[in-house]
Image 1 (tube, rainbow, N blue to C red):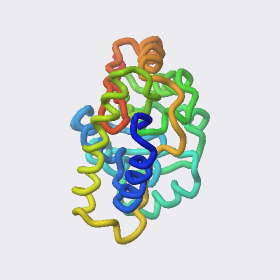
Image 2 (image 1 turned 45 degrees about the horizontal axis):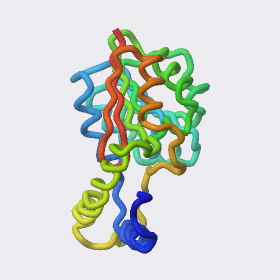
Image 3 (image 1 turned 90 degrees about the vertical axis):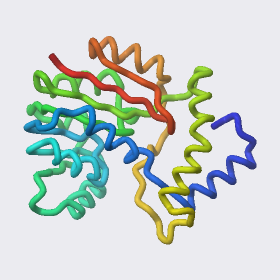
Image 4 (image 1 turned 180 degrees about the vertical axis):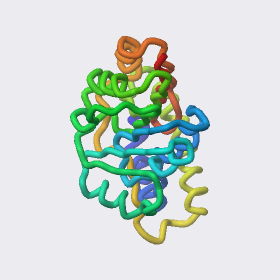
Length: 218
């Protein structure tokens, strides 16, 4: 949001600090709509506290979540009922995937922490034939379209914060899964590299400073 005055930015930061909401969870239902009704296995890369992994059990018989942070994967295990078919591993997303393949691979706001083409190749190679890869990512604003979408997201972000918190400040800290560092690649760079690795991939700029990527392996 570089086009706003510094005073306005500070006011927005204070507002959202008091009324946080999870921008990534906002896309979870959309992710489910990209998937088949029922699959055998799913992998959530950068699973955090496991919110999406648990949702994926509605589509997959087995779900595995992987995250580089041992503390957050421990929290995911605590939040997941014992009978839920979800397992978690604290490991690097590229070296910890093992030799298994999955019918579904998801990755939400984690890809910009990884070497981009290498991560896409790893996801591709671990996706079973007929499988679906769904990514919600973060890109660096660069073009006028990027900045316009960012500006349009500002009032919507305020509205969502009010709706999610029913107009009141949050009574206690809310666990968030927002990115911890800015993205390096622009959307155009992401699209160019993704098309080189994943022929037929579909990408789209989104509101709330996100983009989406969907690819189905033949």
